[in-house]
Length: 269
Ligand code: BJW
Image (tube, rainbow, N blue to C red):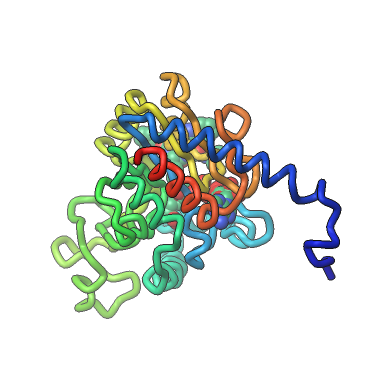
């Protein structure tokens, strides 16, 4: 059993908290000065809402399942019923989830400084927390399309008439699939273009809850960094951007982001 906090040697607690407090101060000052901010988010921002990440050791989805058997067009072609069931389970989890303090802090930051959320997440929780300008790079759990991509924009309720799982497109009879981006597929062109343009012209980019290993999405923070924006990284573990970041705020989004945004609000008066 862990000893109570007051029995821990001071060095075990104080330096980390001091380091975080100093980094928070620097990051808040950058955000308070900024006239254009991008928040780049990944699965970790929704972990405190009960949604699994992909690559967390032991508990991430890709630690339990082979992505090549689930998140590729080839896998869907091979066994659509299996892949569909897996997505329906996950989408049920997403439907039951609520935005957490991290999502809400990001929505609050948009009221303080012009901001766009560029998310790799498909769960819609930023929008439900109140963020108004959200670019979804990897699609959405709320939308479906036919495999031939001739018809799309369906909600699950639109497909309720079909008894099959997966259902068939009401217009062309093709199989329906989730409107998400699988490995080897192109990202929605306009969304990626706008995200890269915003990254090239922002003053600060906050990366939160992403391992930063999936491309081309990870070009968004890389572009902001190359353009000279302040890079703020929020993650309990060091990720692909932690070393390059001006401010690495080590901790869960639901704890760090509300503190960060409260300080930006104070600085902006
Ligand atoms: C917390 C926390 C807390 C925990 N608070 N944080 C260049 C180099 C190498 C490979 C490639 C490359 N370019 C392209 C590729 C191939 C591939 C790729 O990137 N592979 C790499 C993985 C090696 N990319 C693609 O295939 C992409 N397409 C493509 O390139 O197309 C080319 C093309 C062009 C033109 C025509 C045709 C084709 C598509 C990528 C699609 C990714 N899809 C997925 C599934 C989406 C649907 C679904 O949900 O099922 O997207 S995979 C998965 O990874 C999902 C995520 O959006 C994405 C990123 O993951 P994310 O969000 O970073 O999550 P994790 O789990 O990795 O990290 C979580 C983090 O949170 C961790 O750091 C934790 O520490 C942290 N955390 N608790 C804050 N409380």
